Image (cartoon, rainbow, N blue to C red; front, side):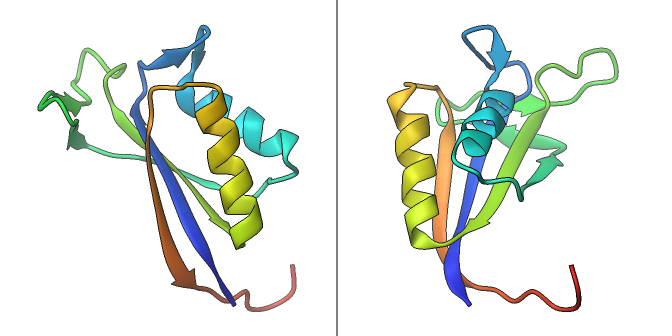
Length: 105
């Protein structure tokens, strides 16, 4: 099947209205009946401003995270527009992909 991989990236410490940004995006996705996602924690990342985000032994709040969805075009557009409407400070990547689902669910 053809669709889009949509990835949101932010440090764990980033908040939107008191909620971690990626948690807020999960809530928005659920409001759009999008329930399949993968959340990844990364060791290190550098933001647009050149600041290095990483998990340290004593401080995990700055740990970079990714929230990834595989969606059809309509759902990808709707999710991106909904996040944009909330004016969240988050990086988003959308790329066209081919994907398959094997076996029984």
